[in-house]
Length: 412
Ligand SMILES: Cc1ncc(COP(=O)(O)O)c(C=O)c1O
Image 1 (cartoon, rainbow, N blue to C red):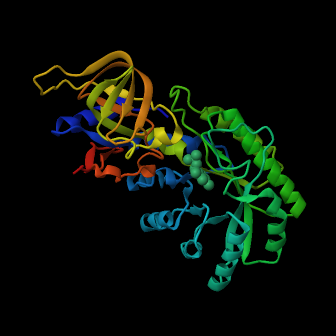
Image 2 (cartoon, protein in one colour):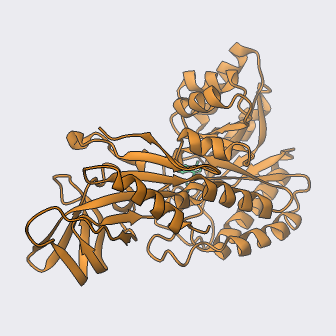
Image 3 (spheres, rainbow, N blue to C red):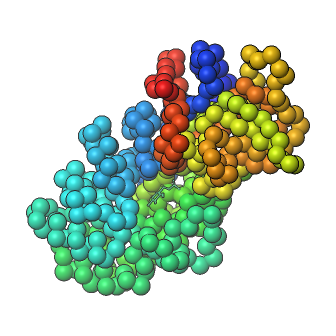
């Protein structure tokens, strides 16, 4: 997951030099994305598949870069399904997510999704009604929320305790009894996504091993013939210590033995990763508008804010950033600056929650310099409240795989 900072900074400076207002932008490095995704796929052992959870970033150039590489896309709404099918008629799609509407379930059947991940017993029964009406058998996984012994919790838990997600393990016997009487639903296996933000490769190997052990017990107990297990997403990005990222080599090397020793011959294991695939290809850029001191704290005010880049506030971290010095200063008075001090980086919103970095050591920042936040390619623009205060949207461009960058969307 190597960042190409030189290429990214060069393209940012080229755009900045061409405009006469402070820059605010998202830049995505498609070449880096392609290389990263191809590396993940090529290092996965036999028996494993990798889908991309498009909720992390569903921009078309991102999906176009990933479609030829990944085993398929995971969608979590009718909107995501329609978006994928509009542009990728043949890419394998799996459909997860809570609160699916009957209409969405029907569309999933019409659009030939490879597998539907069922979130509740009620959803299962509604799906069966729709399957009967359409006359098609529907392939599903049951998403199970179970307690895992010695589970190391992360900052974002979707299971292993009471949550709105999946079918709790206590309800499984009832679902299994019901499934025996309903051939319109074909159980292909089980789905788990107990957590996100996993940074520890060994802990994640142990989690996958627990899923496989549990599925083996269910296969024996219910005499099941399943073909795959989906072990979700959840591999994290270390925003706090960006030089210590998840150890993919250790993880992928450990996967092979897990499957061989699982007692589940012929079963495939699917991942549906989001953050870990696209976070590193994206950068959020703010040009510094103001620098001020409030009592004992420094504040650097950049163009933009959490309405574009909500990731730091949503995850409660101080986001790392780089500074690109810009030498132009057009005013007849001294340029505000700070050096060798700590500062908070804020945006243009009228709320103290518009905080992107806090107590961050700053070597030197002047008004007019550019702040570049890396790891902004996942759950960044797509989870932000874009129209709060009606500031313009940021510029957005993609460093293409071969040619020169081009600006896709000028701010107004
Ligand atoms: C069911 C499911 N699968 C996969 C993902 C992707 O998770 P991540 O981006 O942490 O890999 C999510 C994220 O919320 C999810 O809910």
